[in-house]
Amino acid sequence: MCIWRNSTYEQVTFAPSILHKLAVIEVPIHSLAGYVVLFKTPSRMESVKWMMFIMHFCGAYLDLFLSALSTQFFLLPAAAGHSQGLYTFIGIPVKWQAYMFISAICLAGVSILGFFESRFNAVVRGRGMSILKSKRRLIYIGGHYIYAFVFILPITFTPPDQTNGKFYVRAMLPCVPQEIFDHPDFFVYAIDVTLLTWIIGIATVVISSECIYFFTRIVIFLSSTKAKSQKTYKLQLHFFIALTIQISIPLLVVICPIGYIVFAFVALHFDQALNNIALNFMAMHGLISSAVMLTIHRPYREVILKMFCYSYFYKKLHRRSVHIEGTVVVVSNHRS
Image 1 (tube, one colour):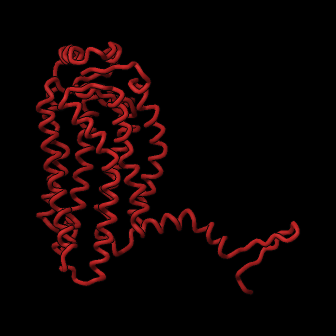
Image 2 (image 1 turned 90 degrees about the vertical axis):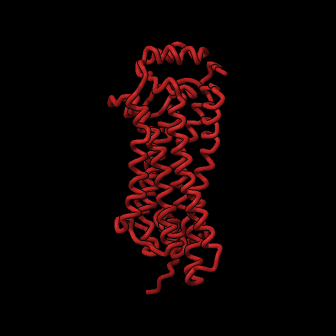
Image 3 (image 1 turned 135 degrees about the vertical axis):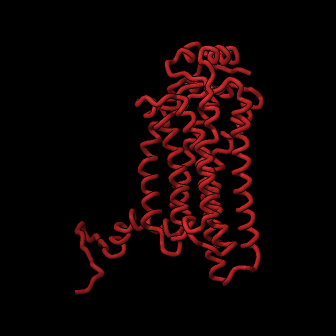
């Protein structure tokens, strides 16, 4: 089914008009979150600092990629479209921007997997050592990051002839206006999306299954009586609950867009308005993740409150203003 309403939501300017403004908000929030994780993580959370920072960095990069670096205008379920953003401005080919987009999504998934694997080793196995000090863990996690960069290369290096590709997509999506295909950066990533779907599907299933495995093992352990002490158990449980909330809330935001994308490919359903709206929702994933991380973890929440509210509450607690007949009398709590 091919639907084109000629509405504002379908135009190439719709996503940039929102996402480029969103980037102005994302940059300071992501920067603040990165600073807090790197320099304000308490000693009791030192073992998770770097894995949390990597997870934050990957999510933030995916956000900024969609909102500012390479805002996508893709004609799903056809693997074709163009990009609008900084990467396009500096001349990076669209096919490599598509490659970076898919890799960025996979990297975000691998970073979550790495964090769960780190928690599994620290909580279940009781080995909180750094990945760099464990060859098996280094190979396991490092291999996944390498995979995230290379798994889509077979499609990237074998694009179809663009004349034939445009003809194929034009026939597939007859409702799309001709000016979309005439865009100078319009690119057909693949004609037959079967291989592309299988490659992305396998990566999704494998990484998701591993995350579920580590998550389940941690839940089973924390539900048992294997913890060394009640204090250790409570610390591990509270942190794991906070971590689960931190990851779950942003994922809930992108479940609908991802569900729609899967539906579009399976049913060969085209609706550019929904494509653009789905993109806008996906671009908020990292922003919500950063905001949740800064509020759900108590040490980070206290740092933020101290940074932005301390001076206000300090004045409120240590100075009182008494208004008497239009005169302000300042009473100090400090005794000389």
